[in-house]
Image 1 (cartoon, rainbow, N blue to C red):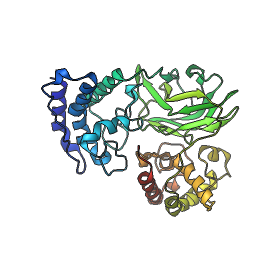
Image 2 (image 1 turned 30 degrees about the horizontal axis):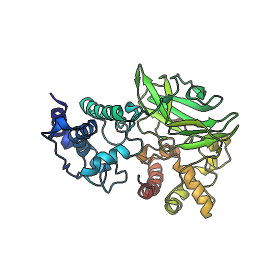
Image 3 (image 1 turned 90 degrees about the horizontal axis):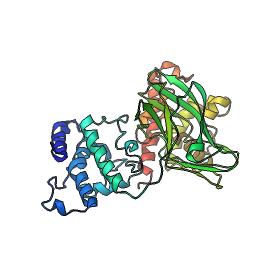
Image 4 (image 1 turned 135 degrees about the vertical axis):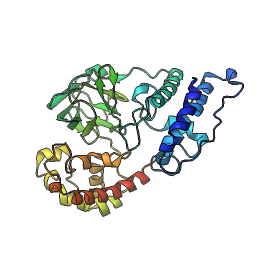
Length: 374
């Protein structure tokens, strides 16, 4: 069976799984009679239009089509090809298996079926073959983290003397990584988009929610800075699995200041999130407990000045997964019944926890809507 016939069969077989009203893909699923005359670039675009676009239309458009909060499918079916390729981190030409379009299974939508995954991967690999040389993959050697303190030597990605340190708690279905920091030595360092990758044998399983996709940070000489808020939860993996870390950029730099994206909905944060966070969390995370504050800094929550609330919002935004808010660490750690070893779980009162979550989701929804789009 040809790949084109396979994608048509998959779209027909699984179309009923789509949730919501999805726009209809209007591209021509039939190759042109002059296909033999197409350039390699045109052939790869045709491969997307005939094989990948129908899958995205059936399974992704309800949440990622036009007028959604994460509209990577573009404003129209005709523009889908360019928008999918250009959306940040969705397609990795340097490491196709790490593309977010492939590692989507842990978000709120369904995972790809094996045949569908093959279709998507083959297209990304074809794009990678045509792309200019992306340079070497910047990735550390896999190692098995231990419970407690861990150190990743960054010399093998060219940053001799620099490290990433973190602590790890083993979960029944994964790993809870926290107090993660980038540490420079005799030179300042700059990293972009670190991806934590558990390994199952020889198979990489990149962090499916791509928690640190927007991380772009510096650590000055002999300084340390938190990596994306310092917390990562890897679910659905063995707690004894090796992990590696892949970087979009890893370089020495003398800039030395921490660059983090700020909030775009500070007023909504103050109106909806500040009160619940102050009531439930600040007694430990506001500075009275050093370990809790290092794990999640909330020292600015009760500073109601505009500058204080902007800082507070940024502190909490680093604990939010904008693609899948309910899987944000600001919720998972304190959720009653969760496996994470957090000392406060709303006294196991689900109603109180859900009220807290609903208040923060109101702010997060505003943050999603206000976030700049590529």
